[in-house]
Length: 187
Ligand SMILES: Cc1cc2nc3c(=O)[nH]c(=O)nc-3n(C[C@H](O)[C@H](O)[C@H](O)COP(=O)(O)O)c2cc1C
Image (cartoon, rainbow, N blue to C red):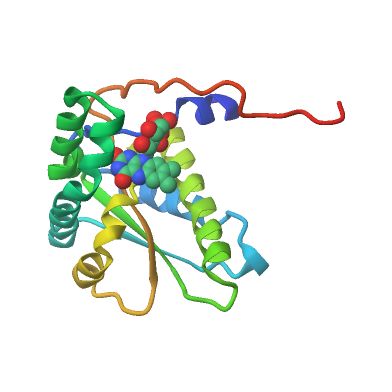
């Protein structure tokens, strides 16, 4: 796939096939994450690739986090989308793998650390799309950070996002892009 096609074709996927993802494919996409830029090249990301019982634990936390999202979702979208999203949070779309992105806590400050990990996440999402995999960047479960930490057995790291990954069960819809978000100055 062409570079710009990968960027345009990456979609947030919320319905996955149960087919397992080969470990070497997962290895390639997380390695792509580690080639992201980072503040002072600290490479402060900590990426966990999770399946099995711990994945089930993460799904349960995501489900418990949905009610925190529901009111704002209801303001923006109709009941069909709210109920679809509720179903997605219940199972994380049946994703066979969940990635958990943490950051080391550094003296750069959280805005630098977070942006570095976000760059790694986007690399992973694009690499996943290139490999024919679906993914969904999710921050809502971060509201229940303590519960995610407990499932993961992690202490002293900053939770940035979780990302379910797997082969898409169906093509996600394409959310339209807003016009007028780019300003050209001095051209
Ligand atoms: C920082 C961030 C947080 C997000 N959190 C969630 C989330 O908690 N749950 C979810 O279903 N989608 C989440 N998304 C996915 C967005 O809803 C999605 O990117 C957006 O609707 C555009 O769709 P697209 O990714 O298919 O282009 C998040 C995306 C970003 C970048």
